[in-house]
Length: 460
Image (cartoon, one colour):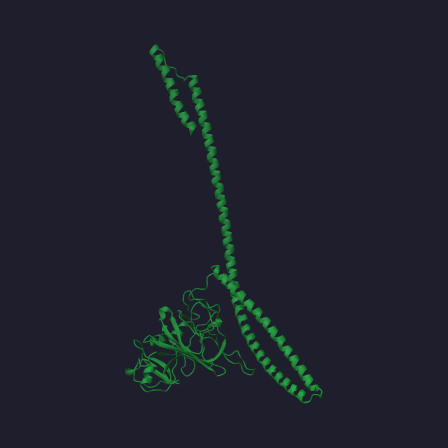
């Protein structure tokens, strides 16, 4: 650029130098003809300027070429980086697919481990009971032998007694070895279970999404055609004078348990089972006793109800909401185990409608089953084909619709009912597996869920 400026500065000088001699010669000799060629000095100056201009242009071209080469190198580096990034992205996608497959396998393995753990717990409890019984027998025998030795100090121990003692000791040692083996297996299963949980947590942290909101479980299911809730016998009540609740029927003087027709406020006629065995009117919303009804139902069936009033049934979320929306209500759970022991717990409840996934909020008021259900939390109802956004996808062992918060648990009274197996030893794997919050796993034979207004005189 400097060369160009110099050249532009030189050209006027050359032209002026050319013009001045011409003018002077014209003044001196007016009749002398003008020279047709430039002077040699002017040509040299012009040539020198053009040469400098050529060198300047050459330097400018080299500089521009270097800049273009730098740009191409940067573009090549960018292309290589982009290609490497695409390769890494493909690798991450492949790893994600592999992690998904591994997660599915781990979930299946987790279920197997859990079932084995339950069986081992059952065997361990049986062995502990047998060990306790044997220890009691051995203690009784030792006491008898001690008394016998004291009464007959000079008598020698009978050979049969000696062989019996040695046999009992061998049995005791065998039981101890077996218990140790079971405990070791249980520890290994617990470690595997913890490892699976850690892997699942790591997968969640990596951002691998769970199945979509209304997706089905990994095992395909056929469409269910379970009939709606069936009636067996309904107490005759006039349609134009229907009560709003079982407590209103009880207040009218009808104290027999059975199926009645009620009409909650702003709702259609609903048939319910009124339970008065405790001397107080309760509306039965769930009953299980023998596993005759499959409770792994769809969202629609849980919404409308299913089963039979003279057997096992679920009243229906929409009907429950219509009843409890009339006033303040109490939820009562009655549980009976295989030893015929009965337990209960009562909660004050608040239930939302279908737009909130029938969100349940509980506060315990009475009972002998501590922490049976989560309190002071919003529990949303979900089934295998419908779960609220943000809820975990629970495995099939937690089958059956239930109210859940942020974890899968075994406090589901609508879960699978394990029927006792015939022609075998007393089977501990029977009934409903139920575990209260931070409690021991129980095997429930029958369950009832009932509701009642806090003020029994609300409906007269």
